Image 1: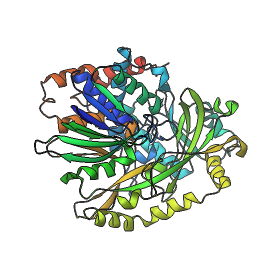
Image 2: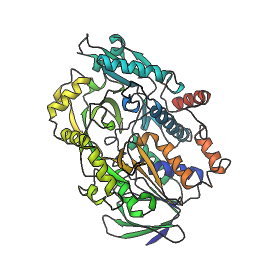
Image 3: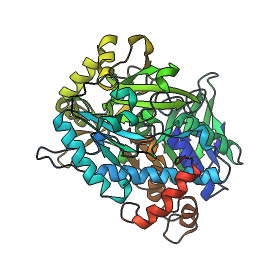
Image 4: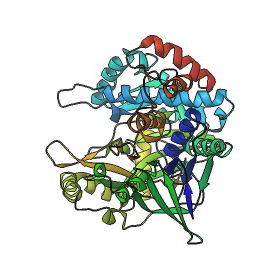
Length: 493
């Protein structure tokens, strides 16, 4: 069976759903087909229990503000992430105002805090606060070394702590907890309610071939019946999380060559005990252990997943060869190609300390994980916490300017030169910046429609008022946008 469509979205996660919704709003006449390998959408990295990215805004994540050997702190990445998250907030606010989303189903007001102990770390946090609060994006950030203030902000973390220990924290009250699984399912329901949309579940993409006219033939196989389906489309987007790299390689586009992936597994300690959960209302991030990857910064988070409140602590990273939770242990090996072998080997050799760290994390005992938690929550009880396996994260490996393979933390859009296909690789901050990432895809793959004075640009500015302008540079623009999103999404209540 062959079906002609305009757009094929591969992977039923937040990226594909976000791009589908934006395209539907820009051009309702487009035929869009979403292909998902599993029996429902948002089941892999986007699922709330699998996703560590729960509203990354750069407020509390200390790995986004690195300090060099000379003591200089860079806040550039935090600025980029915060302004990108504001784009997501605007898109969601637009959909809420149209009645397509209900904020209480996917986003909740949750303060974002950083917490450190020890004199050196206190000095770091004080300096970081001075730099960040001087910028309009972070002007609401509070700082305190007063144990009484910290007790109000994070009572679990101060309860039982040595009163003589130097401690400090920052806090942004309008932070958010985002259940990206619930959000994605709502976005897909929105797409299903519109004409010209088809959702293919339980379908694995087997081949992708480009025709002479630039269009693509995407072949799928139903995992239950074995039936084959062929989709012909002018544009293909691969938003399959950890599965994006193998799919990109199937496309054979020149731009895919040289890319590899470094998979990392994760685990969380989870507490659902109501008298503990109710005493903590914040996302509290600390400093990563020496040798830990950036995505392994420890944090104690208030989470509301599918309407259920819980506390999560972690993540505890680990080494894996799977690219997806429902993937194969052969994923890493089957991704090796002649074009990426040298970069994969080079990145592996230059990150042996990271590999050893991840393997060590795998063999941590339950008691050792609880001891890590007690650095944050001194009175934590072993029996109150259970271990939850998270999703997989595949970090990007690519060649640097010198041709050496390097491990890159973050996300990256890879697009064909003719704009007919694009893929999103990588992980954190991922889901939180989905709207900005998908607009980047549109700008690279639909340059004609995205012209400065074109219809798509006008419609995007209705959806995202800051589109085409810089929230980093324009304080007045932020002062217009932020009150609107905080009010619409009920984050200032």
